Length: 428
Length: 190
Image (cartoon, rainbow over all chains, first blue to last red; front, side, top):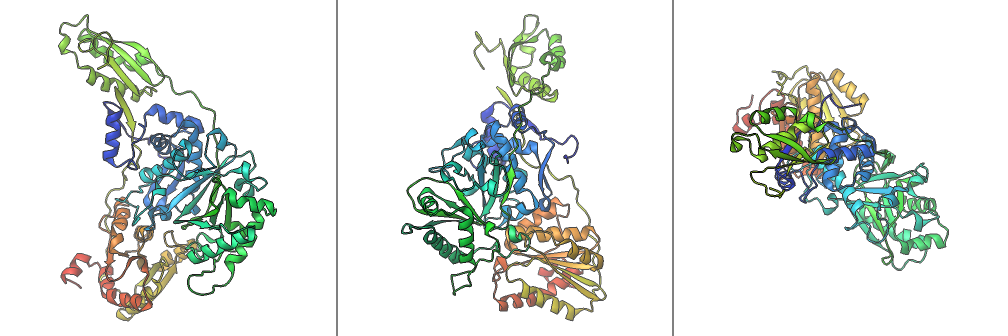
């Protein structure tokens, strides 16, 4: 399925990257933080990293008349600061989120201001340096921060998820900037990784999306075995309750995600409790009839609606519970691709029209330096009767860049050395 | 150094403004459709509203459907039943961020298959409903808003819910026959 033929993002030309960033702020296209300029070349590199063409449809939000293309995802991925090799993870996260049970409109428009956790499994965690250990839910890790940010920028920009349109969050919260971490599969062995539990191969890389309206840090420092840990978890979850256990649309695809750190993981290993053992025990505790106010029976029916993930660092004896909004917790395969070469366009041919105009004035442009995404041209005025009559370099740069873009060139940055202002090759 | 930047947003909708269907001059003989989103305690509100509407006019019948979640479309069988038999409809209660927009979308989709409709939402969420209406080409789609003392989210007591159904039943009736909310507020009701 592809978007309408010829549909691609509008392009604007800026004097420089700073001007672009300021304009994107002014347009409301950022999350309040500076972005990386989404030039055609950078966007194309992201698409190549996932083997996608720009018009390919990643998903839709029908209530909002939104169709999300691979190009839109790539633009926002560049803006977020992702490296091209992160892009397949971003794509997989959005395929899951934009599916029917991802319930994008609900989970990104609710007054509760839900966030989304992106949980990464498989070898790609190591390849991309996705943090799984100490402080993995916090700042400082480029892959974690930018993948999560790209996901949210797509929601904001491509899915109309702004306060002016469909984001009705009364308060929102900082997790809506970015929330991505990996499962610490190595340290938690022999626990099965989440994606293996869900039917994927250990060698697959996946992303699991979980919407959340609350994050409970369940302290259980006095516990010395799995039962005591999970009794504390059950007590806290029953006190909190969940809105997701009686939703007919999501049904038994609703799940609560429990992130178990090393301090508690040692007890599960010591007593030989698998994830399945933990799920079965906890479900029983959660299903018990209510004992009165502030004690809700959780109406889940299957143990796998309690998702266990190992992550974090030593120190705090805590389980972190991600309390869901109205979406299924979905796992999607990450599919990278070998990068392909971008389109090569003959620069001289693309500048042909401009060459003819300048020749009338006795001026000409020659290529001084060329790279895949940047070009430096030299303006010579030796044959010009009136050097000052030739268009200024700043205007020539915009015209040249427009022409190159329309011809499909990969050049996204262009400079003209103008002898009227440049001395010995100095920049203007 | 000149730089090209690509736009990260959704292109503007290509749909132009669309005329509403004519509203019935009388409601006798109409088949009333109700699309409930099931938001918290909105049930008693709709129960009272329907009861009072049926007392005011001689409807041929009522198709009363309940969606499986607050912000998703109706189930396919329910939707088929509704669109096959209803001749006029009410959607709601748009009391949360996403369900208000979805209830508006439900109303517009009914309009598009020939069933004039009206959506009811909390005034706090009117911008969300209006955003859907504008995108779909119906910028002036009929929306009946309710506000204080009735809170959004329909976290009402049963008494509050029944009271609200009673309080707006006349306005709902008037708007189903084409009266605008502005006219209602100025007293020019049919």
